[in-house]
Image 1 (cartoon, rainbow, N blue to C red):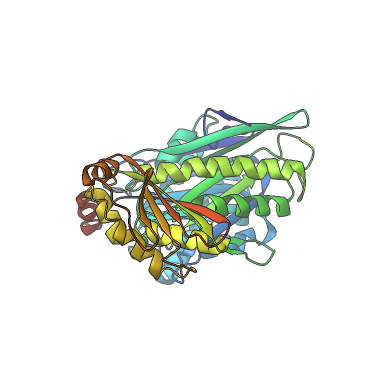
Image 2: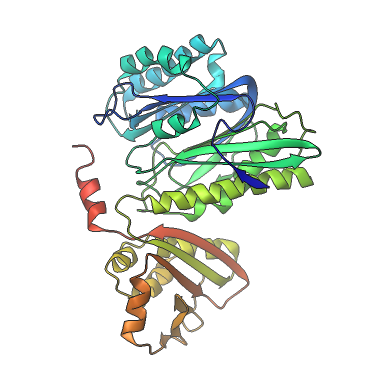
Length: 413
């Protein structure tokens, strides 16, 4: 495996574009299209929020046959809680793209991100589709990555390649996410859904691999469980979260099937890409000044490890302490205690950086200046040892700054 340049257009047979169609007041790119020259096997994971945007519902319908060939996405408007017209507009986006690309409408997936409750300016979008299609380019991945951003400050893309036999296989991805980040999505497709916690985000993945749909779904779920599910920015789950993967088979490799070495390698590549994109989201989080890694060790089971890590990661008090450079480990201990995990405060240990601050149910004396220096850093590691078992998990988060409040107190205006 190795990292290569590019994003969604790195694999063979994919083109992309991103343009401004009139949704954003900033006049930045707000409409993206990713297209494969050939029909693809496809899979997706979606938010489990009970309030779901129309694009989430429609995409689940379109993925029943595990096929897709294009993804169109708009930013600046979530097209969520917009009534029946919202569903009509989502389907109109798919139909319009399908007509210009001369493909099946059910092979077009749709994504929207932005403000909830505002009617989608569908006429602007439909009017821009001819230009969007004409501009499709094997080098258009960066434009596509820019077209899905909302409060993000930077584009997020990555690509990797690996060998299946003698064939070179590539995987590329773009993503967005800077706020309303606290995941919980599930697998969609003909197999029963597998519940999991994933990040509030959009992520579009392309690959030229020949891979069985079942293997594609398994790899997507496995990789997302280990990566996107580890991050939280503000504890708020979006209505529009999704990760979509398209595989067009143009690498002409030996078909990758479940439970094989090749399938495990493919999953590891997805995991590596997702992990990097997830960390980029934390670093680009709204108002963030610090990147924080929270590791839980010796939990009774895997779910407990994950639960404790994410509970501490989303604690508002912990995140405020991080911003204020206040090494208040008592807030960390409290968050561990109100999680749903098995916890024994007499066995628990807490480290700030390399410094042990809690043991045997009480504090370990440390010089205040030493701990203050740890929390003043831009990258901070917190380790929680539960002393109950053998399972571990890591979550990534950021601090809550005054700038985060400013951004979100005036988001609609």
